[in-house]
Length: 364
Ligand code: ACO
Image 1 (cartoon, helix red, strand yellow):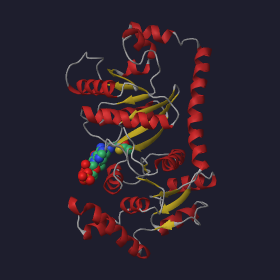
Image 2 (spheres, rainbow, N blue to C red):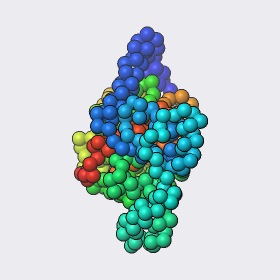
Image 3 (cartoon, protein in one colour):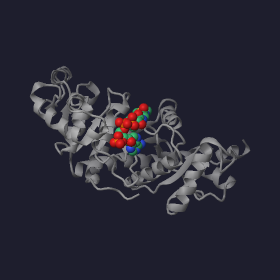
Image 4 (cartoon, protein in one colour):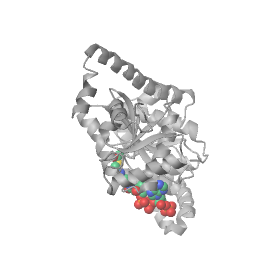
């Protein structure tokens, strides 16, 4: 309690605090601007599944007018037309793909055959493969797989797992770890933070935690930010011996040994992750020194997921994500509460992802 009191006194000077905030907000605004500018530099064809939803369709209009991407609408044609007409949205000259319609029967058969070839030794038969193509996630992911689109944004009206399972089954992973994980960018007043894994791996073992960290570090660098990583838990550097702190600690050991260049440390409690001064004072041996952490790796799916949602609701901060890491193709998933602005940001991220992915396997 004493320590946090001392640390807080340092920012009691309100004017100085405001200047510091603005500096950090500058980073935040720049981050979003950078992503959008990069997207525009080389536009990509992005599928919006759930295009028959008002917010998604409104976002599509923004994306097209700001020239962030070339949208392809995937969904029920009649519904899309109704929503567009009712709300005067300038989107109806864009390509509309209604995967359940008769006109797509040939494509469904073609895609089903590809899926069957991929999954015949994983228990899938031809009839099931054909049936899967009535599902937008399978159909849209297949469009990206065969090159009829460059990226896919789905998930607004589905369960998250229903969008990433086809991505895993059809596209697979893009990295030598053969790993995927989910990340959120949390836009706080102190600047952007990268949170992972917030969406994929239920009960991560040591190696899964390490792999998630490696994927996340790789992604943070894409934003031209040098990752400073805290692996958080409910104990500090060995103060609790068993359970998730131990798994996190072992992951840190593994990373220190095999990836000495990465600025990562833990396990540590969240207050030490977010308060550099406090951490440097109490744990001067930490590899992070007094550097500000910008990347946080959580010990479990529960904690990661709860943390970003609490930040969103209680902290009233904007969040971008989930950004799916490790899938070979630019496939991303919206969350149901996404605002129009968040959907537009996600579209820009998907375009940048499509610009940089080029099907190559990342050595990690
Ligand atoms: N990394 C790499 N590959 C993976 C991973 C992973 N993390 N997880 C599964 N796979 C592989 C499987 O090994 C399998 O390989 P195969 O080709 O040999 O079959 C393939 O992906 C497909 O796996 P399935 O068995 O079909 O799918 P599974 O049931 O394992 O589901 C999934 C994977 C969907 C990612 C699952 O782990 C999941 O549902 N995670 C939690 C999702 C969730 O509910 N998140 C909560 C919040 S979402 C939000 O807040 C927005």
